[in-house]
Length: 294
Image (cartoon, rainbow, N blue to C red; front, side):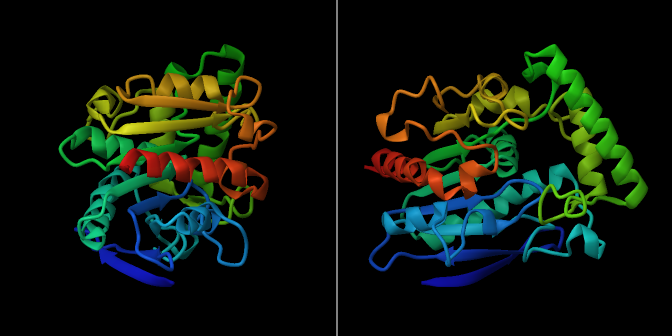
């Protein structure tokens, strides 16, 4: 069964999410959030196998947000919407409160792909008293020289960021759809924040050091990377970024993976969430979450 949920943020933005429930009683409620330049359709499609569908079949209820400015939570950037990175971080509180209310005593779990992962971690680090029971992070990383061990690759990444910012400044947004990088454009102020954090530190506009707070995130967290993700979140980058997490477990798909059921599954950045060939990984994620709440 699927329904739509709507909630208004303290600054007046209307956020929407899919609420997907199993046929029988739910064992937990999972908040599953998407990457940048896309929307909730990367995680939940009723017409095809999906990560969210795998969790629902395993008996979990899943809240699938469209993040601010994406999907149903417009206005989108091409419609004149504008938002900052810090606003996405603050929206974590809204999603956590809604999930806690809907769960009605069930464990609240967290699953993130890329963007939703680091914005959520930034908020949970500032609010260690309010954390989910368990957390799965797919390809979570922030582009910054501090987390990129390869100097040549960093030169390439920094050049990409500078070029993308010039495009965003010229057009008033990052035109991801026109650039064939996703189905949702990104706001100018958000992209300015990413460019600032790439050349400086992972901080808020007011100077809150998000990275310094990561050690306060004590929830059990499974960090999943893939050798097939050769640019956006390479395993070395993601492992460096998530190092301060005190209850981190790392799973890297590829030549070093020791889980036989996942042999040969080496998706790229988006494929972790969208490639139907990654379904054994999704089943592993479901089993890991169920084990954490047992």
